[in-house]
Length: 150
Image (cartoon, rainbow, N blue to C red):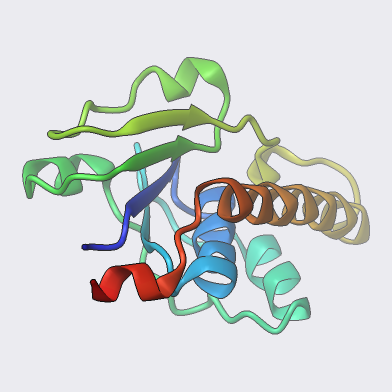
């Protein structure tokens, strides 16, 4: 049996979806195949890079990917998890095959105001909520690794 495939999706694939992908690889990498992408891929958000480095996770070299490119490649996912607001979530393509679409609405670090330290603090809070959500996802949908070897 193949591992369930998960796609985290946001607007630019620059912060929220990158953090979620990294956490699922950390906490459920043996149970899931995971990717992330964006509706309008941009560049990695340095705030996200910094707060993930604080957790010992390096996302600094991750590419940003276009969700429509994945769709054109015919990729299929068991779970498509949007991590942006509901309006942008509705813009996501429908992938072939069976899947569940989940919507996790997290604040966008690129829209944060304040000093650099205030932005970092807010991004840490977003990171921590994403981390908790990913852990809950693994607890709910994770499959024991030995089940793949049947």
